[in-house]
Image (cartoon, rainbow, N blue to C red):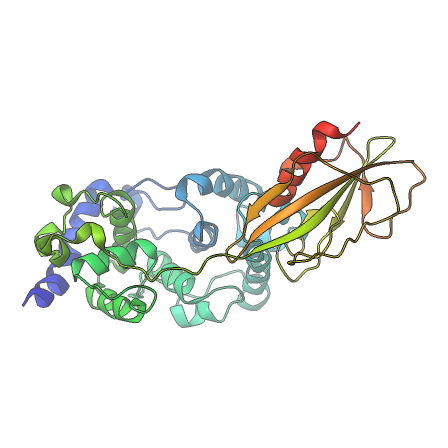
Length: 354
């Protein structure tokens, strides 16, 4: 009986709450637009969803505004250079997303006349769009009743149905339960309402059950276990890798930089020459010089490992000819365009450079 109540009643309760409390986002249509039947711009929805992967709303807002001011349409983005997009992306992390962003924009323009496919299946054919992003764009931009399940939705559904099996093994069951909740009417608003509920009320710690619109239907609240769900299997400890970063400045102030290989971590990004990242890295200076270690090392954490970098410094004559990389005049060098790891390297090196 409870499951039937949840499936039939939750959507109506949640949409009524969303109509009153929807968060204002630069990529969302306004309440007035929605009332007038205007749909969100698929380009803006897609761009926001790609940016929001592994990143918070607060962190994304400024990036989203900069991107849409510089490239207001998918055709504008498709025509951008890789280097410009990578520079604007710096700081958002997971740089494969930026590379896929360009691939997708160019496919939309080249293969679809600059218009995003309007179905979940059609969106899945685009490079860089996986199941979650396809469902989110289909639901939010085109009102297709796609099942949108992110971390917030997993948490809401796990609590609503008191699913005690731990993630990630329980994810298929949570997707099935989320599908049963998704209404045929206003599925895009429903998807955003679920995300808003998880972000503002059904939070990971100290959920505000007293003001939750779904509290009358919530099995976890009835059992007194809402704050304990969803359960998660313990993660294995992250290994630590090591490496060396080489920061060289020429006598005229120019900085030695290189573009990393297109594939792999930080692929296609600008950075400092370095060694491999492993348990026992092999030194690989870009040229013979009087390299000295900086007093401070750099630690950075990726999804699957920690990285400790020793930073080696050198001052080079104007005639220096490195085997890797090229010199960028100091007046053109903008540390803020570097990915976060390389910015940390520069910050460790700069106080000790001429």
